[in-house]
Each structure stands twice: as C-alpha cells, then as structure tokens.
Amino acid sequence: MDNKFNIADELYFNGKYEEALKVFESVEDKDASVENYIGCCYINLKEYEKAKAVFEKLITENSGFIRPYFNLGRVFLAQDDFENALHYFNKALAVDDTDPDAYFYLGVYYEKQGDFEKAIEYRELLNSVKKYYSIFYEVKAGENGKKEIVEKVKEYAHKKKYKTF
Image 1 (cartoon, rainbow, N blue to C red):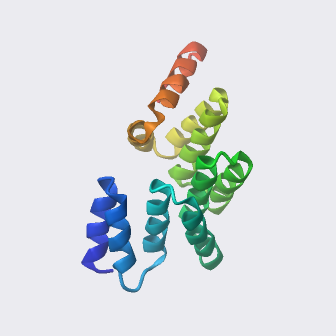
Image 2 (cartoon, rainbow, N blue to C red):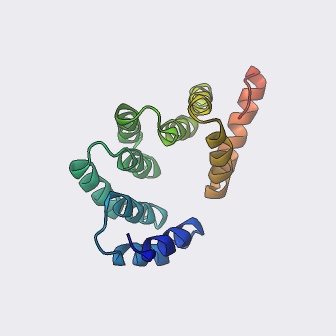
C-alpha cells in the first residue's frame, strides 16, 4: 500500500471523513482493509446505503474478514434495524470470537436496546478478550455521542455491584 493509506488513516482518525474518503478512494490496488475504511467513512458521513454496498461486497469476497460483518451491523444499528444489526454482530463473532470489536458492538447493541445487564455481560467478555480495549472504546464511545449510554451502563453496574469497565 502506498503512503496515501497512512494519510487517509490519519484523516479518518481525526474525524475528517470526507477528506479521508477521497484519499482512501485514490489508493491504487485497494485491499479489503482500504475498502473497509471506505465503508466506515460512509457510516460516519451517514451515507448508509453506500456503506451497506461496500460491506456486503466485502463479505461476499472475503468471508473470513470480520470487520465488514460488525460494520454492517453498525449500519443497521444506526438505522434502528435491530434485528439485522444483531444478526451481523453475531455473524462477526462466528467469524472470529477473539476480536474485541465484535464484543464491543454487541455491548453497544444491548445498551441501545436498554438491556444494560446484557450490555455489561458483553463488556465483561470484551475485558476478558483484551483488557485495554475496554478503556479505549469507552473513550471512543463518548466521542461518538454515546457518553450518556456509557453513563447509564456504569450506573446500572454500580447498582448491581458489577465491576465497572
């Protein structure tokens, strides 16, 4: 991959999704990772149909690559299509049950459903997969406007005397 990927990745990390998308699209010889980032740019730009098309194509061409499964679940979750969101989050776990993102997004799913006990279970599973991911994603979730949900989960955990993440 060329230097464009690094530039696009930096733009993406800094929340400059439109700029990142343009650079990712200009990468020659795009691999599945680049295509996945393109889909993620579309999610963040709320262009969900374009994101779906990217992830569905990736799943067809790379069935063992976990990222498009949970990213397609993210698209459905953003559209409040909870049935399909849960389907793709579970598919992600079936592809790779050691990937912390799959547990994270299942936790987000259950948080959004108001099932805080189940959300905490997935946070605990996330912690058992990779302890440091929990802290990273708690911060990331806050940045994406999910801080209120994170606080509700913490409050619930405190009431139930769960170890908070």
